[in-house]
Length: 181
Image 1 (tube, one colour):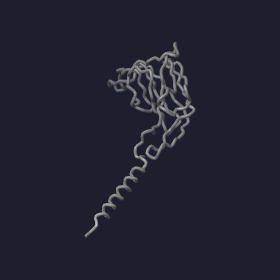
Image 2 (cartoon, helix red, strand yellow; image 1 turned 60 degrees about the horizontal axis):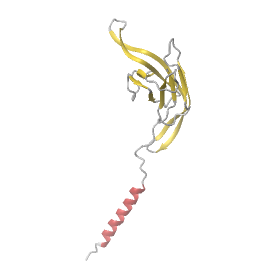
Image 3 (cartoon, one colour; image 1 turned 60 degrees about the vertical axis):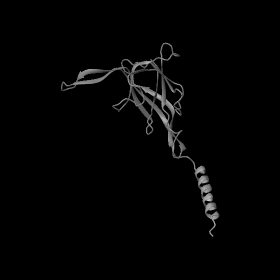
Image 4 (tube, helix red, strand yellow; image 1 turned 90 degrees about the horizontal axis):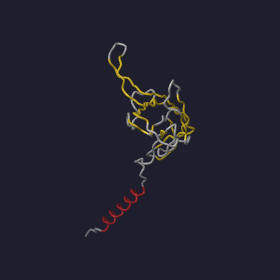
């Protein structure tokens, strides 16, 4: 007669070892708290510096890019935005466009084309990048320190003043910059 206790005990032991192994593993294949923070900009009334003021028909385009910044509602009236900074450079430039609209014109061959109309200001954000290790699943993220700006002066800038709330960008939940217009 063959005993059935040995295979059952072996099976029970294997289940216990498997359960302990699975429960002791770190869940590092899913990244839940690791992303490079966005720069949060809020727009204020230059005449009443504590009052938020929407920018009409706002459009933002990265300098050197042909498309608008992803995640920003294009040509909307906005009083705040969250924009990405470059993680491989110490400067990121944007065209901040108020009253954005397509303007019909002609190219050099007389063909009809549309060009960007509105009030266009060129604004560069300067910073020092620091890497932060989050986890094996998330890897490294970039934080930005010593944030400053360079507004290209034009004949009539719609951006009147820029104030930095904090020179450190390490989260996307708080405003970092106030822009007055």
